[in-house]
Image (cartoon, rainbow, N blue to C red; front, side, top):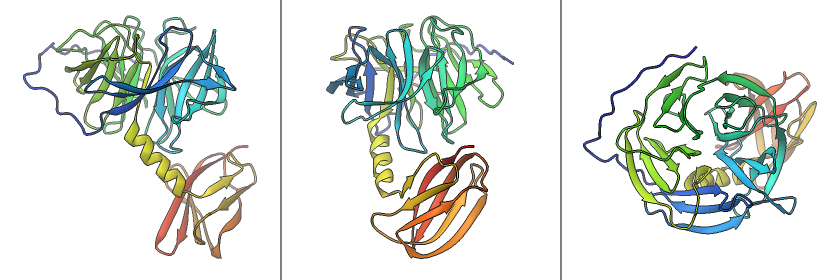
Amino acid sequence: MIQRYAFPALLSLFALPLTAQTSYYAVYSPDQDSALLATVDMVTGVETNAMTVTMNGQVMDGCTGMALDPISGQVYVVAKEASNFTLATIDVNTGVLTALTALSEKFAGITFDNAGTLYGITGDGSNTPETLYSIDPSTGTLSLVAQPGTGSDGEAIAFNSLNGLIYRYGGGQLFQSIDPSNGTVTDIFLSGGTPADFAHALVHNGSSFYFAAGFTLYQVSQNGTLNMLSTINGSPVGYKGLVSVDAVSVAERTRAEAPAMFPNPATDRITLSLDNGRMERIRVRDAAGALVLDLGVNGLQRHELDVRELPAGLYTVELQDGELVRTGTFSVVR
């Protein structure tokens, strides 16, 4: 179901307020034959720490999309090698990719929602262009969400954690919101500037969005008002994905404090381990937050948890160590 509303192109009388987070990781392909990862200051456009993106020792042709998983804390990209597209995680310190699954469609942008569901928007060269899917990161299975089907070359998406909607720039001034629960598409359009159609990087920054179109970096409000920030200094082409450096840093610290869990995904048993600390109680909650396991374990550093009775799905584990509670996530597959 697609509902369309045209908003009048009103110019903003005041610049949008900037958030403190202006340093972002960005992926791009300067010569369409090698993928690079760099850090960019969105306000100044200054780029630093550029490095090649590799997988199994081979430099990738490009990366088309980048997003931070709020559950695992890992950064995901879509890696391109010739006509093959692969979903992978990327180590932002080295540029090294770990392949997860092959993709049957050519995705131009990806984003995660608050629950860790991955979404991707296909590009014009895909089998089903300008289409939004949810993606299973372990199998590559796609589920149709919406078919905006309009725009001109640009395919950039970002999840708004405040209202649960996915926002898309499709080129040709077309800015949209998409409700992932029912596929409703609402046209917003952009005002306050004319960005390039070639735009594959959009990211929600807490109060608005950061947006890379061609050589130019923008801030854009939820209602589509543009504020030009800078031009890119260093990259000869536009960025294909953006992830906050601060958000990745927080995720890395959280992972360091989280329990080790293996194998993950699990089928019958999963081993929980703490490097520093002891478990006094183990609680497991399902994806809806319901408590499904509650065990006392008498101060162990390592415990083998029986998950044979749990349905397939994503779970959160809470390990109580005195007043400290350490959390992690695991999946059960059948």
